[in-house]
Image (tube, rainbow over all chains, first blue to last red; front, side, top):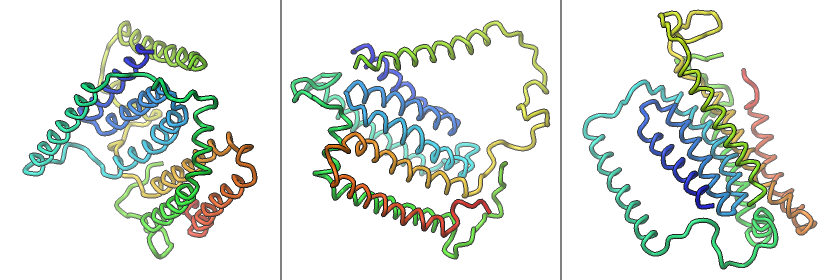
Length: 178
Length: 117
């Protein structure tokens, strides 16, 4: 178990570093897919099967497609950032990184535990069943609100992509690739 | 945890197979390069322009709609495995959820989001 965790964690750290350090944005996005998949492996080791599969299906599958599309829309040929903005971004990056590092040290100092949490109530049923029972009884209202959120997103994407007139507002400068 | 062992073995075999194939071919392949060989392969046609051209927004529309219905499908999994416990109550709440999304689906259909133009 500890070897599996170490393997997935090493893969996750390596691919995350490559996401940040690689110069080609498309390659970075593909390494993010690998990072999401290894994160799914870690969720599986924590016995969170449903979260692990959602991680792979929704994040690695669907959201990364959106990421790739956005990269292609922005048409990034080279690093466009220079000047003062870069300095601000660097400073912010170091600051956030330091905060995260401090959090990690605080976590390690208190307790170092990997793998499934022991000592909790014994799970007689699957993880997905537990989520289902909680979601469709106690958290019924947030669940129904989710459908409204999805509806808003559907209308929003139509308004953005097709324009208010209902006709396709085709961008003339955009070349269509077959 | 033990039932995931085949998946782990599958992952390991896939990684080893892909890695060894690419690694071996990069080790033993003869390298005689010329400009024609180094160019991108485009079905016998000489490559024209940059592959990183800008796409139309229509692809993005399809991708977002895919994500939204993907999330709807994800909510169906925990519902399906607890369907018998929830009974009629569960059926009604899932129907409400799907009807609200159906409104969005009809809206997309009316706005001709699925037609390519």
